[in-house]
Length: 282
Image 1 (cartoon, rainbow, N blue to C red):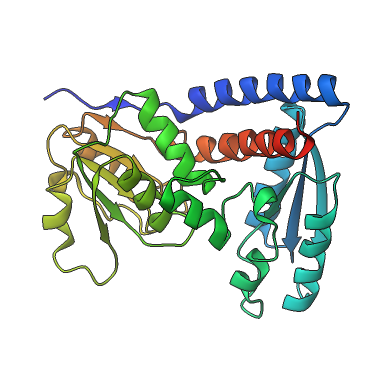
Image 2 (cartoon, one colour):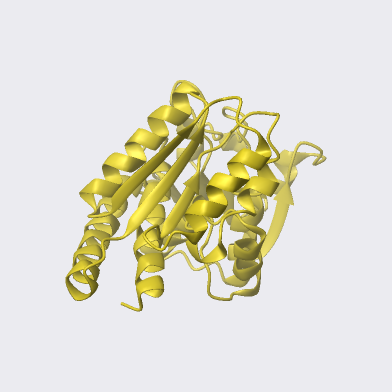
């Protein structure tokens, strides 16, 4: 069997950002309002600082204004909620991104819920998850939304397929499973307590690895011809899938880096412009 085709998230993300920049420019021309994304960071975790800076740079390239709120590491849950409530009420802010992790002393769920659903462009609130699950208008979690766009780009129709999601996080595993279910896939969630993970993965037509354990999914466990989406990212640019061996059996596979990662940011920017369009009536 020939090697799997790579799913180029970098190229697709670039096209999405170009389209988003045009939509942002059109909105500004029609309404005089530039879309604005507020990023909130608690503390100075080096990886988070880098991610936020990258998102700010991408925002500017897409014609989206970026407002950054840096809070000290000792910020309390109540103080963070106050900041997010203020941004939610600010008509000049159209999207809010709360960078995580944010410290064990903070109630993350309470903080996320302080974000107004119409500005939840990162898809982290209960309202957004409910909308995703019921197929109602709202904003998808960015990585799952990016994964679905990537599947569409490569003509992967989930309908009738067996999809296995390895991971059950609130912002990746759970929502991507719901999005696949909404597209008529038969979805199985796997996690740290799944018995005989290999046997479950071998049945999958679509595998989404999103657990944060390097090379957990082995090539020998990939069903020949399956589509493999590696949403894991571990130190050293290593995904959750053993790429070299999996590529020998899959039909399509995402590289790490260059697969899912760029799609996450592109989805965030596209949803920010969509939020601004809805809020301005543009």
